[in-house]
Length: 239
Image 1: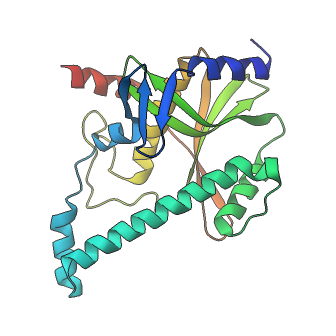
Image 2 (image 1 turned 180 degrees about the horizontal axis):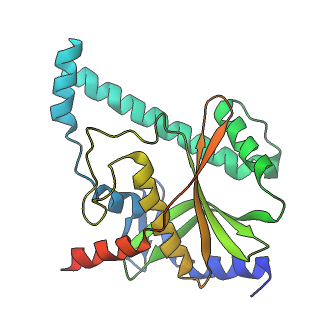
């Protein structure tokens, strides 16, 4: 199957039975609700005790705990809104000749300008699932390498700090060799996407985080293939 259009049709058909409720962020396949990749990753780290920690922060800053919790909620919503806007820009700016309105969107343009001609967009916002794992997720961008006839999974990130970690805390088994940081959670995320995508019979040669900066620049980070640990995680959950 050499033609890229035929490959695209094959992938879309493979995942065509997946239903997604955007409002509730729920994936369903033939009336079975699947666990999202983001929810699966949350099970791989210790829960954040927001109420307890907000109490400490509030006391230190001389404000109420509710003020701190509201501040965190506002920041989370602001980050989600920013992420959604930038993802939409990345998906549509070439099709509609959109112009960047801030540094993050300019960073998306600069990223696309850096891509060699032999690498082309394959699919945006691809929703995928695995019945075996009971998992579903959405990849920001899949690229196709015409030289190798293999695929690259790309995910945009706008974190202030990709490597933030609290006192050396590690992720939970089987990812317990990795620090609990955004970057390592994203490594797991992209490995889930690799596993889901390769069910179609195609090979992923690379997975990259594109860290977009407010000044219009970006950094690219290759990520490890952790699919073996993902399978181990699901075996542990069965036992």
